Image 1 (cartoon, helix red, strand yellow):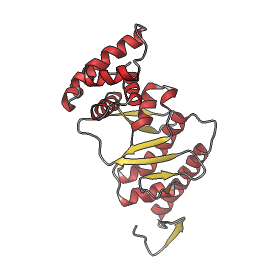
Image 2 (tube, rainbow, N blue to C red):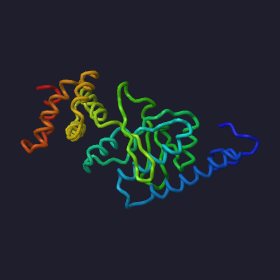
Image 3 (cartoon, helix red, strand yellow):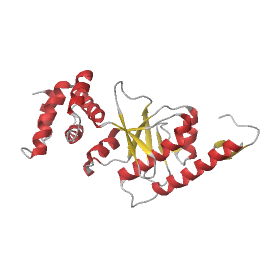
Image 4 (cartoon, rainbow, N blue to C red):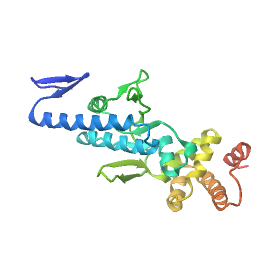
Length: 234
């Protein structure tokens, strides 16, 4: 990070002391204080904390035109609201210019030795940056918060598509259950198009039928062996 002739260090991050730089520093310090308070609050629900943390991170990164998108297991939890899928790993897809790392660090995160995870020490909040770009054709949803901030989340269709693609690589009962739980309320028309585009059309159809039967009470969630057969098209 290039610093002018007048700069100071906060932790290991340098800050400009120009008028504009001071204004940005004050705003960042305010976001850091708010973030640390949320991260340390034991009464905060996991998904609520995640949305709040991600929205603060998005606001802090806005000046760099970096827009983090919530993906992975936390996106599954967001769309299904199913406690059985609770996770603490906040997976974010975003561009990663060096300045973005400085912002993340300034907010109170420390980088793990593996280089992929960032954690706020003493709290259950940690983020992982698995990729810099979303799959071609993927969409995101802007989730508006009452405080005016927003969080970008991978669409329900595309979260489901990712799980179906994982099942094509290797059947796993936990991933299969997540896929079934993502069907209620999903845009079936767009799902059919996306599924054909990425080569999981048949799997999407089979899982859709089972998901409808489970939702209507016609049957229970399939067991491990049946889920395996379902993936294999048996």
